[in-house]
View 1 (tube, rainbow, N blue to C red):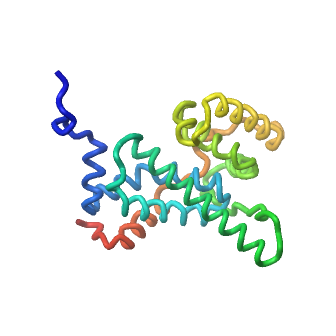
View 2 (cartoon, helix red, strand yellow):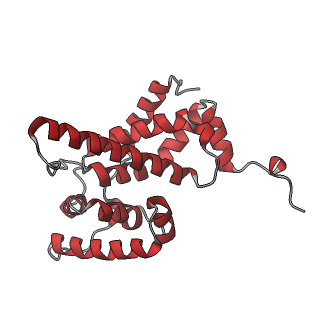
View 3 (spheres, rainbow, N blue to C red):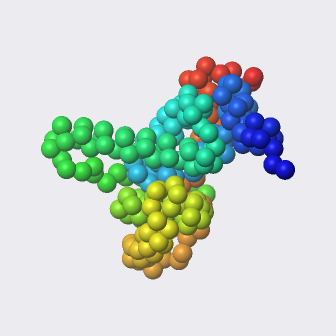
Length: 219
């Protein structure tokens, strides 16, 4: 016989969220270190600038950690955080567009220069792929980041982006054709290596969020 909901054993994710809501530093750190790269990639797919994407990720955590009481477990914590990040990134992009319109009447953001995002040891092909992905229209960038780069399933991507699974497949197919043309017959890259967000950068963001939350990282 099934137990009443109140008597069901607490899942690992629910326990982690509960600890994070209590400002447990280790729980907060675990959540951020687990999701940093995925949120960064999704944010980068929208704002197309690594510095802006890092800001989006930081603001996403601050907003999420301030409203953990609203997380009911209807979706995974990852999906919940990703949706917040997407909303934050879209909001930043709208504000930037309005600012540019106010300043000089431009109708869209100029294509940003991704800059030296890769470590010196990474190959030039990965840098070329990043630029090609960032040059895709936004709808295709998000699908590529979610499916090809982040490795989400078709169903997970559809749920995350609130589109039909068929649309995910269609957009990914078209995006791949665009990338092939953009890369001019270069060898297929290892997409999982693109848009890295780990090591010192990951640590710095975690420390910054904990500091803004007023949480002792050693607690």
